[in-house]
Length: 504
Image (cartoon, rainbow, N blue to C red; front, side, top):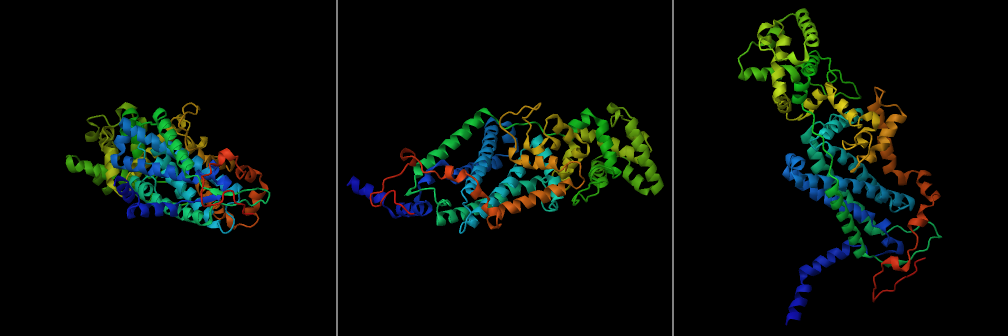
């Protein structure tokens, strides 16, 4: 009776439907070399993607404070980072295998195209992810990334300085696109099977696919990631705050406010292929915060005084304020209790009014709230105009001149430590140096055009005559598609099928 119940349970319609679905998903037979690690890389990449989605959901749900301060949050952030590292290693190896074995030959061209687009999306996805961490790396990588997108003529639509936009792109838009392309990629692989050797001198046999070894390899990968994240945490250097700078160097903040007011700051004079920072820096960084302060505080309206003055008088006010800020002691800017009341210069009055607000942290909050569509754009542009982001990046050996985004805050005094930075962006750093793009006013545009052209060639590689024959000249295919030894095949016995069937 028990055996009958067991059999009924085992062969229930639901169980049979699940097994049927799994059978349809699996690749059941392949060339004998298909059970080697080289042809498990696609599955391992999917394993990494699964871990990234799982940890990403937890991080997004718990929030930035949790992943920056809570021990479990730090661990999940570290798992996420190490999985990214593994994901890139596996994707690059997967591309090398497909390239070396000419796995893109007709009718498999679209297999390569979908895979190449996935790789390009992962590159973009990773950089937007770094911009969400909430540390100094987020700030520096966001401003560097914004310059790149501006140079690539996409800055009107892609703004890494906008946290909300970056969050949506990283958490929703690109993951869905990658998952969709992964499905299309696998459907084609399942349809055409594992690519056969192009060279006639490479022998092979059809054998059953060893799914057990596939899952064992995936499990080992996940365990390795979890262990690495336990001992080598994701690096963290606190974000730069306007309040900290205002307390340490008030003159720098006051000088920058004056430059914003006078339209001479880096943001006001921004030059690139496109200029998405079309907002009025005088209004954003001085006038609007000053007006918001006046709503809750009784004070003479210095802005009204300035507006009512003649153009010549306004120019004189600005010049006088410039001399005043430059000459005033660092510790006295914005601290004198009688300064606002005694000065007849409205520009100096506004700066003196805003400095205590900047020191308290309220100024940065006002900038963030001023335009929700811009999010942290105003704050990061103000920090960039003070040049404090580049100075800090240089002190950590991660500024653009030193291959920038390829490094991270954990790389101190020129010493590489774990986990590594974005080593996959080294070609971008090399191109910057090779073409001297850092000194070129059109450097971001040229870098964007070079990278865009390379990505286009990479994606369309199977369709480019002569170039797509290059792998045939390389000696890697015989190594990758070498017939494995009997013990390494991992063949499963099939009672109703002939094993080692020759298909030549």
